[in-house]
Image (cartoon, rainbow, N blue to C red):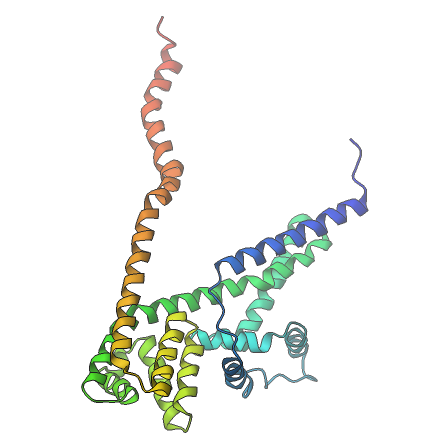
Length: 302
C-alpha cells in the first residue's frame, strides 16, 4: 500500500479535530444543568447584574499581548457575560475571578495544542487547542453543581421554617431575617449567604420582586425559581403563603426521596463495572494460578 497523499492526510486530521470538538460539545451539553428561564424580566436582570460593572474593564486594548488576546477572545466569542454569569453562580469567589477563568481557558488551549503538536510532530494539530479552550468549562460547571447541591440540601428545611415563622405573624421578608438571625455568620451555608444578599439588596432600595428574582438568578436552581414564583404570586394575589410553602416543601422531599430510590436502583448495575474490571480478574487469577503452575511444572499428569 502506497503512502497517503498529504492533502488526504491533512483532511483526515481536520475531520478528527472537528469530530473531537463536536463530541466534547455534545457531552458537555448533555451533562450541563438546565438553563435559567429566558423570560424578559430575568434576562434584563442578568444583563444588569453582570454587565454593569465588568470584571474585564481593567483590560487595556493598547496594552500588552495578553490584554489584547483577552479582548479579542471576549469580543469574538462573547465570553464576558458568560464568564461573569458562571462566576456569579459559583458564589462570586475571590479566586478564580472572571479574568482568571479566561486565562485558565487560554492555558488549556495552549497546553492541548502544544501537547498534540509535540506528541505527533504535526503542526496542524495546534488546532486541537480549540478543544482545550472549552475543558475548563467542565471544571466551572462542576463547582456550580456542587454549590447547587449544597443549597438544595438545606432548602426544604428552610421552607418549613419560613412557613412556621410566617404562621406566627411575620411577613416573608421578616421571616427570612428572623431565621438568619438565629444562625451564626460562620455557620451559614450557601443558601443562607444568598438569602442574606437578597435582604441586603432590599435594604439598599431594590424592590422585593427584583431581589427575589436576583436570588433565583444567582442560584440557577429550578426549585428556587419555583419558590420565588410562589412568593411573587402570593404577594400579587393576596393568597395564603403558609399552605403553599408547606405543600412545596413536602413536594421537594418527595422528589428527593424518589431520586434517592432511583439512584439506589441503579447502584447494582453500576457495580458491574468495577466487578468486571477489578474483582473477577483477581478471583480468576487466584483460582487458576495453582493449576497453571502445576501444568507448567509437571505437565498434564497422564
